[in-house]
Amino acid sequence: MSTRRGFASDNAATIHPEVLESIARANSGHAFGYGHDPYTRAVEQRFEEVFGDGARTFFVFNGTGANILCLRAACRPWDAVICTDTAHLEVDEGGAPEQIAGIKLLVVSGIDGKLSPDAVAAQLTRIGDEHAVQPRVVSIAQSTELGTLYAPAELRSLAQVVHAHGLLLHLDGARLSNAAAALGCSLREASFDCGVDLLSFGGTKCGLMLGEAVVVRDAQLAHDLLYLRKGSMQLASKMRFMAAQFDALLHDELWRRSAGHANAMAARLAAAVTAIDGVQITRPVQANAVFAILPGQARVALAQRFDFYAWDAARDEVRWMCSWDTTEDDVEEFAAAIEECLQICQ
Image (cartoon, rainbow, N blue to C red; front, side, top):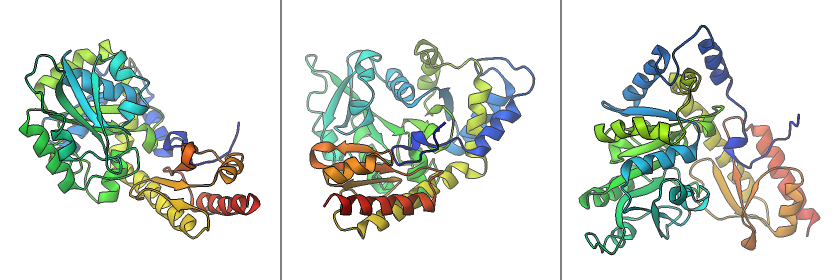
């Protein structure tokens, strides 16, 4: 088995030892399936404590499933979802919003990956027009696909516009832990307290083996999700082992420790490559992602030694992601390799 390390994605990281220990503790005796066990219900109760009174949680297998499940619960057949042109829903869900949920995406240009209130308002000119699809949900990511953050005040301003027009605000929280850690606030303060109506909470990118959570505080959405999760093929039979992972993630704020470390390693990497002649950072480094311009030949040479993504190959832009298990030695070795590849390819 390869021990190669890289900066391709926080999905590529190992499973956190505390998560594995939690799974092992749950692996004793028999328990009812599909979440009808005391262990899962106890973890669901912990989610309510974290996200606020009335919060209902639905564990699912993956991020795409979580996002699509949210949209299916919130939208009717004639409804649409407003998102940015860099949103995971638009770029990396394989057409699932259209194929699985039957939902049209209204895509607008974002600023550093973020939606502005004005951009949302511009999509609301045909409300009530039977010839036009009706916006129902505004979907954002926190942190965004470009590694940027909505400050709480920005999120509240966006939510005000969304709610003033009777829409719902969905948060793709695959990296919500990174956002909350960077903002120095709680998960609730980074989401529901700012006006979010429903969200997906990421576990896989924060040290879990698998699993995401859909969290809502609206009773009708919670009722519908109970049935939609099964019909969307996202209901795990051995639910206690999925719940066990989130139990570890919430205990002693493992999510903050893991995400905060990933963020710190990204800041360290950004500082290291800023000093390298020939590298240009292209996006604000606010969470655990570093975007940079790396000339083509150097990029190809570096890719032979480390895994990472070419974000926009046409302009030599790359994305380097740090994870809960990225080490300072990883960062230093990677930065040294970047400088070496640039020198060789000059």
